Length: 359
Image (cartoon, rainbow, N blue to C red):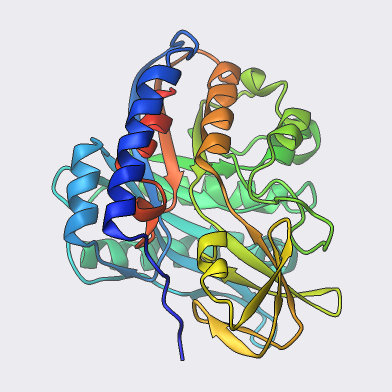
């Protein structure tokens, strides 16, 4: 049985929203001077079925969100067929809100470029382009202003990933569509080794800062101290950078000290509401009292679950620090990851507004 997420009670949600509004009105006036012009508000949508609730549409409108970065599909290496294959394609059950533009995103595993022969890079670009055009036609979107590729490339795979981008950009001519690439923290600090992608823009993914598979990791989603170690030269990065900040949580499951799987959107509130299944161990850790399913993910008896989440205070502190590190730019896209069903229950509209207003 799939255990659903347990939302906040309506009265509690209203009270929290009021308290957040008051605290932001009095405590958020220390933002640094703006060093960039227009700020475009955005969200990532990372599910395989595109559909928005009436509440989500309403809040997105109130927040003046202008963009959705929508993952169209994944590309991964299939060892049996010895080929790069598309996976998890999105299905559009409804059109986008008319006031919101779509940036299609394709996630490509680094393993794909590890195994892909140099001679197959151009054909991969061809396949991705045609797959993307098919999905864009179904979405009702034509000629997007920007297309994004998400890949955690390394110094060993940079040449093939960069060649893929160049081959894909040739297919966009004479269209003036921009191509962006996601940029991880290590790709900023070690840019002399990992290289600079031949993209028009980059999006700094300001999350996933530690190895979640290690039992002694604290919070792998967001660790500002860890970020400071990587991003001191951020304003010297040669690509214009947009930013993406996290608004999600997960449970990291360990069995006999070994990582087994992730539980998406598990937070401490949900975990504490499952006393017959999870025993608190302190510091965000729980022991499974029996086998079961949480948010669609399996756990076994005696598994240890480490809950990692992003408190609003941490999100705001990170946004303020990050806004001081960015160089001057005429436009900046600020994206929040990601638009899951309960995001506005966990982060009410005033909280999200405060994060956007930091930039």
